[in-house]
Length: 475
Ligand code: NAD
Image (cartoon, rainbow, N blue to C red; front, side, top):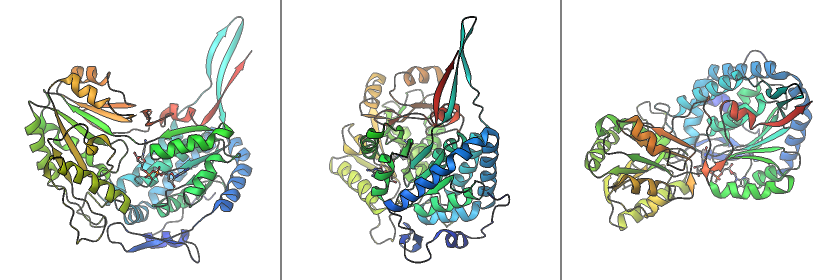
């Protein structure tokens, strides 16, 4: 643990602190195809070393107590802020997201904000019974070693969502980043580690085999997983033999319902960012928009006007607010889903036609109207910059369509009347329903999925409790 964080003036300096001295896997910029840096290729034996070290470090970390651990998280936030620009540039080059807009600089800022908020929550033992005949209290003890497995869309922020409450509760952490974005997470952890005792936080930069070994490891007490529903199910299976605690933040396909009294022009900007934040590569982004027939044309028009003004391009260009898809597989998924929508006769209002001559995985901002609810672009999680807009005539039908899928992460209702929106919100099967906004997360407000979007909660005091072992003391 150091008191003064090293300051890296550039992303190149930061990279030189995390790249292996020889070898490693080259990671390319999804906007240009140019190499960004080399990531170590850790293996299952490397994981064993990391887990053993994290296990050995855990009792002393737990013994520090909440006050000292919170101070360490605040110091980690200071270190991130001191290195914010180098982190944001590296994130932009590896993930593709632009520096500006709700993108790379925003994500680095959120990492510091979440660490500070997580350091600040109180978690006193709760007194459940206190009467003449007895007393019962509930305490939250450390679990031990937490394994964290993350995706490639918000690699730094989601790592902090997993590690901050785990560390705060007295656990040590072994984190496995996505194989698409290991450099961002290694760099972030390098900075955070300047504020932590040795071996409290490890990053193992490996593939799926390392993720599998982590989720079945007998010395791992809990898995924090954020990623696809398919991988979440695999993790449930591989964690079963050791009865591990598991928090699953899985895929979604969030619906938004625009009620007939909504004002299309007033809502268009928030609808746009609700759907296209991080170029649509966001778990709780608006992915199916249901609009009442009375205002369908004006909502489509207002969205086309806003979307048409948003520059997309290489992340390091300060003008851009939308970037490429992060990888070829995701580009292919979005391309194929839009092609199927076109083949089925849906109307392309904007985009839908990627420039084959352009380097990078750029898919243009795409708005699709007059599309059936069972079209694959609506029914599957497209996870990209393509929004299907479905017309409805009765609110009952809209609610039924919104609830018609196996997933239920977020949802939104858009209306001039909060009361009317609240009534609809209460009937939607999703972990969060926003009114006149979509995807706005807050470190104080619990977040988690309904149905096959996962289980367990992150953020706030509820999130801390999910990283502790509840223990009742009764006398
Ligand atoms: P993914 O499931 O393909 O991979 C996520 C991580 O799991 C990677 O680190 C990967 O190496 C690892 N992994 C793969 N197979 C594994 C296995 N069998 N055992 C253990 N680990 C394994 O997901 P992705 O493509 O990186 O991310 C996109 C998905 O994540 C989308 O579905 C999105 O909705 C979801 N997501 C959800 C949230 C949320 O909070 N609910 C947030 C962000 C992303």
